[in-house]
Length: 275
Image (tube, rainbow, N blue to C red; front, side):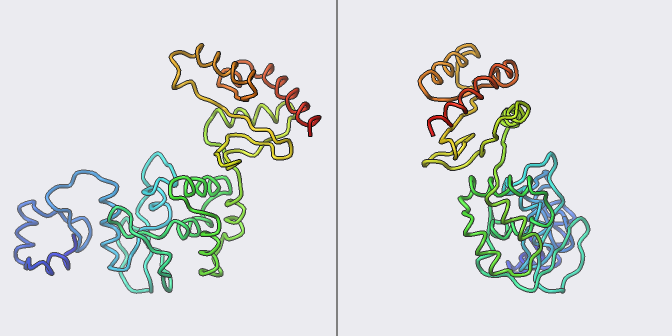
């Protein structure tokens, strides 16, 4: 809570001082207090940073991306907050971004913390990320929050002149790999001079791992998590392939790569012949 909030609740200055002394309040930032305890919490740290920067402040950039699980990092990024105008002092440990105004469609609340909307977050991240990182962030935004490309495009239109717009447009239509298995599969194709598919895209109403639009071919890369043993899983996938349900496993890629590449080459030639 902030000092202003406490005063608005009828808690006078002398009581705030007593509560700070006896541990009921703990100062986190100037005028911002944790109530009752200082148990470590990333969410509490981010909320405190937003409160410390004033009533219009909003969590943004990498900190918001971490909170919303749009970007994954080993450690929580330092707090980043966006405010309107030039007023407000610097706060230790908080990176402050300043803008002239917020559009009403670009603001949101997540678990009680004032944040930017997801499309605006992607626009803010665009100048800071590589194409691969931004493409993955766009993918997570679509999966977790059902953000469509046209929503991000509309955000660009209402925020003209922002850096990174070209990169963001590419990222919205780019493909991502989401696991070491997918990375290894693409590497295997390239190693043997085979065409690389589109990855993790929507096709025929489903999310598919690998798809060659020009061949009408879809391949899934499957884990054995839900089978009683690796052997049972491998046997099941082999049966699926014989039934025209095309799938490859960890063993196909990492242990039998050359054989799998030959099978893929034959399959791709067959699809071209049919086409």
